[in-house]
Amino acid sequence: MKKMLCVVIVLFMIAPPAAGAEELIKKGETLDLQRCIAIALKRQPNILAALNTVRVNESRIGQAKANYYPQINWSTGYTKNNPASAGGNRSTLSPYSDYQSYLNLNQNIYDFEKTSTQVRIQNLNRDASKQDLENVSSQIVFSVKQAYFALLSSIKNRDVADETVRQFQQHLDQAKGFFEVGVKPKFDVTKAEVDLSNARLNLLTMANNARIARVNLNNSIGLPEAPDYSIEDNLAFQPYEISFEDVLKKAFANRPDLQSVLLKKESLEKSIDLAKKGYYPALTGNANYGFEGQDFPLDKGWMVGATLSFPIFSGLSTKYQVDEARANLDVQKANEEALRQSIHLDVQQAWLNLQVAKDKISTAELTVRQAGENLDLANGRYAAGVGSPIEVTDALVAQSNAKTAHVAALYDYKIARASIEKAMGVK
Image 1 (cartoon, one colour):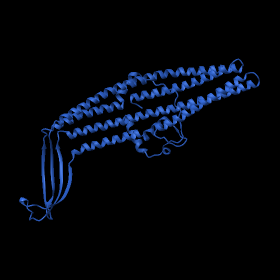
Image 2 (cartoon, one colour):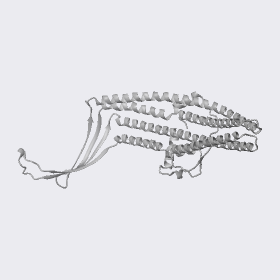
Image 3 (cartoon, one colour):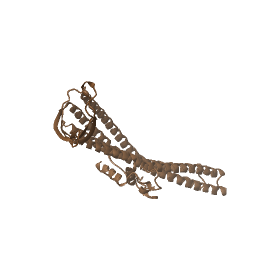
Image 4 (cartoon, helix red, strand yellow):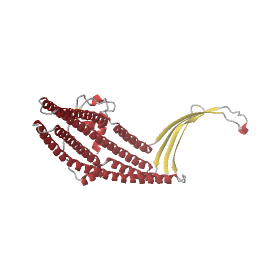
């Protein structure tokens, strides 16, 4: 998890948001899945927002630590005075000027660990924001996988549709040949022409689906204006064996959203301690050195001392701050339990989907083989003059549907695996 966070930050430094699409992807380049993920982790706005949120929380740590150090201020002023005499009569004194210039220093000496508690809270918040960044990157990786495999499957479906068009064209040529020699009726020709037109319409739909899938992939990697490129075909079945218990164990150990909630809960526990410290006093030291007077050169002076401030009554504000902190902690505990239940559900669904997707692939492969054999028989029967065009059409459609179902099964398995990896908090 820390490794992925470092990779995200390094990628952000290497490729700033200003980089154009052509600088990241060359026209005609072939991209694999990992390259698409790397580009997304550089360019996705959500990553940039999460990175800057980490920076915000790192700045808050410095703000909390500032109370460890002395606070030094310099002030200077000028006053014009026109005093009045006693009794309200017009003054007989001349107006005079007063000049002041002081350097002031204040130093927190002891505040019953208020400052150190604030620093610990901000450190926890910073760590939680890093887990949020990891969670955002996990979401982006999953989205890229979905879009990548969707484009692959749509390309394969387009190829299936294109192959079906060629097969219907061959059948039409065959029907025309039989009709011209008087072996087959005109019906066979018109039937083949209708089937070919329907196949071409389906090809147009599949081609458009592929274009839309490419647009979705471009958007998922953060490059809507990406130049033309091709992607590596890795839709082939690769077995992935893991038990439900292992998935669940890894999910509760690795999920960044759960780690973020746990860190925020710890931060809220510290916030209760911080609120309680409102009952305690604070000891501060102060000193100043400067010049003051009516005429130059000014008289110089200095002061040094310490102040013990003890809250006696603050309108019960400290009590209500403690109550608020406890209520916020209870809210976070409820959120943690809800997230744990959600993780358990994610794991169950992902694992079950992986199992059924695996079974679908073997069934779909068998269906493709059977559909191919059935088409060969139908073509053979038609060529021998004993088959009908309807039989050939049905066989062609069945083969096309079987190949499309096989592509869908491969896609479902890839997405199921990506889902189970996301559910476990690994990439």
